[in-house]
Image (tube, rainbow, N blue to C red; front, side, top):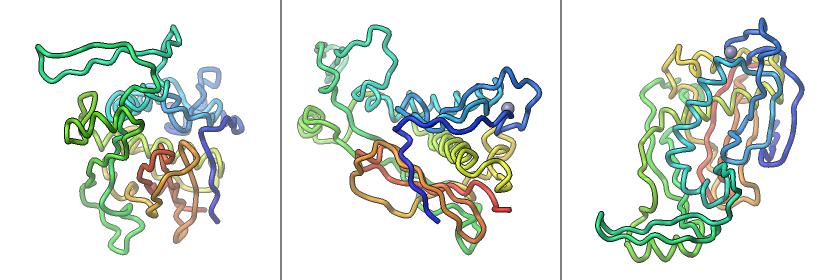
Length: 261
Ligand SMILES: [Zn+2]
């Protein structure tokens, strides 16, 4: 079975009524709605009443590392950074060194951006015969440029480097993938269809990430959808496929979310 969904289109799943991370249902009126794919990258799938405030704080911190890091320039160019004035223009500073820079006001569409993401070298350990649980290995990948201006700048500089400072935080990126995969599996399958592996990792009570997160089935090329999610069963394991920014040719990932019951 293989379902594909486009989380960039609005969809509200059924109420959960308890926290999908710590299982707390005591403060029902304090449960918050979960954006399955972060709102900050345009995710519109919502799982209502499914995260307590404590867990929402933890998952939000996980997401912010990636959203303010490797995805920042692309979010800016796509108009995904909250801007009270809804400004369609942004300041762009082009500098060659500290004393030599020019600042100009440009149309947001022209903001030069490259999509930067990570590629994992192996599939999740649980999907391998070795059931490997070594360290998670990842590399940066550049899937841009997103527009002509970015392309021209890259040519001029002779590099793939543009924009903000990039921090290598693929551990946090992997945690964000787990959060997306877990909430999506609960949304599609319900809480009783599988024994979930991921909440304890998301809440940092286990650190063996490479068993559960890794490279995907190898989708390449551009998609018409901004993001893509899919779900499948492999050897009784429930596996979520994630491809964020599929539209720009980004890599895909597999996340083992639990064992089917
Ligand atoms: Zn919770």
